[in-house]
Amino acid sequence: MGVSNISNAASLVLVKSKANIDQTLKRPFCSIKGNYRRVIMASISSSSSTRHNVNQRLSGDSFIRPHLRKLSAYQPILPFEVLSEKLGIKPEDIIKLDANENPYGPPPEVLEALGSLKFPYIYPDPESRQLRAALAKDSGLESDYILVGCGCDELIDLIMRCVLDPGDKIVDCPPTFTMYEFDAGVNAAEVIKVPRKPDFNLNVELIAEVVELEKPKCIFLTSPNNPDGSIISEEVLLKILDMPVLVVLDEAYIEFSGVESRMQWVKKHENLIVLRTFSKRAGLAGLRVGYGAFPLSIIEYLWRAKQPYNVSVAAEVAACAALQNPKYLEMVKESLVQERDRLFKLLKEVPFLNPYPSYSNFILCGVTSGMDAKKLKDDLSKMGVMVRHYNNKELKGYIRVTAGKPEHTDALMECLRRVS
Image 1 (cartoon, rainbow, N blue to C red):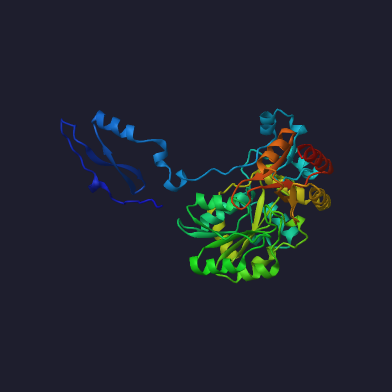
Image 2: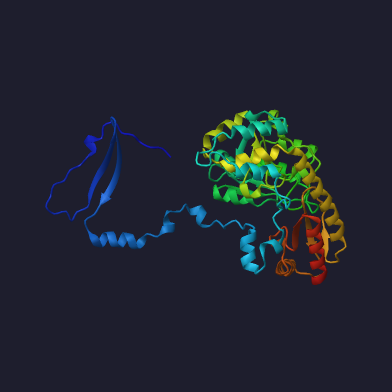
């Protein structure tokens, strides 16, 4: 959208001086700034009945873009306070294994830093310079390649706003993180779904066909994938990077995989973006801090389009403080990986569950033996244990369980025994 500035609009102003003003007058209204006049044409009617009829015809949603009227809202996971009121259970008694959150929380340095904020009344640094410098040290990638966002969700939307015109296409590989499809809908893009194979591996051959025939702008990939925890091999990723499509690789759970991040790859692949987050690794899901590695030829335009103060003072301070204690982050990661492996072994013993091996901090389970997955989820929630339930085409009859603390696993297993 543009703003038209007309340097001399005096000749456009029509003046009518009639006693009878029942006719509709069409006259521009001019706001003057310097030597320029911005002209806005308006229709004025003195007929009260006409105005009344116009007001009757208008409703609020008539101003909304047509594609958004058909958009379904994203279904988020509820926080402790809302769950407590809904279930009638104290927040501290709820075992939350439905959102892949880090139950250990951030390092103690984070709470200390938040408790001594010096300038919460000043707008944050629009370039998040301190955090980007800390991330450069942490990742080994220069800060020029790094952009920080209000969670990865903001960066996903920002990428789409910079890349996609209405009607452009993206490739989605379900089952996967549903924000890709949601944000594509918000940005009026078309989603081409290339379902994963039964073992949740990518169908690279079909992706290649779709890229050739449909000419999508970008493809969104997650490794480890949410919700099954599988990883994308280097060989597969290189094959997709050879295709004429922008590859957005979401590494939200990379720390739990034992696989090295591909952030460095953006220096040699102009069509690769890598996303990371503090939500899982550092227990900062509530403060919303995500970041991405971008080729320099792309990041320039994201800097232009992003909201200037998108990362709050508290979020940047907390993330910087978390990176100051890598030993704590490593210890928590090891604890969660160990508990994930223990949880997998225990879930394999449940007769109505079929757990899938995972490289992340969660385990996907097929619900079998005639057990209804939705009822199982509801029965567990009544006992204060929250798990994620799926009812879409690709995951009908599945639940996903987050790896928590050992006592969380113990409580889950006790509840599973009670519903069997």
